[in-house]
Structures are given as C-alpha cells and as structure tokens.
Length: 66
Image (tube, rainbow, N blue to C red; front, side, top):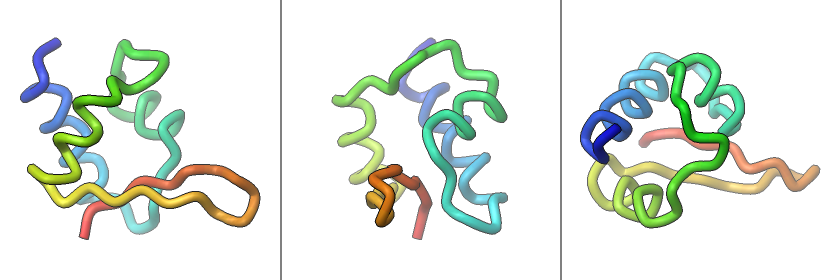
C-alpha cells in the first residue's frame, strides 16, 4: 500500500466520523493491513491533511482531522 492510498483511506474515514477514533478503530473500519501505523507517514499526514492526535486522560490516543 502506498502512502497516498493509506492517507486517503484515513482521511475519508476521519472526515466522515462524528468523533475522534483510535488507531484500532481506524485500522478496522478502513480495512488497513498495518498493525501499527508508519510513524513517518503519520507525521506526514499531520502536514498533508491536518491530522491531529491527542492522548485522552486514560492514555488512549485519539485521531481526528480539523
């Protein structure tokens, strides 16, 4: 899977989501093969699609797009 395919799937899912999602929710709903996201791609998406990530009070990282 190319970066562009990965980015587009994540963007589509997060754009249609009403609430921030965890990586596990993203991976499952977007049918992504990666157990863990590529860290370089995640940082690139922060620039490309304005991806935001934040830990909640339980330490769970939630992803969303502004």
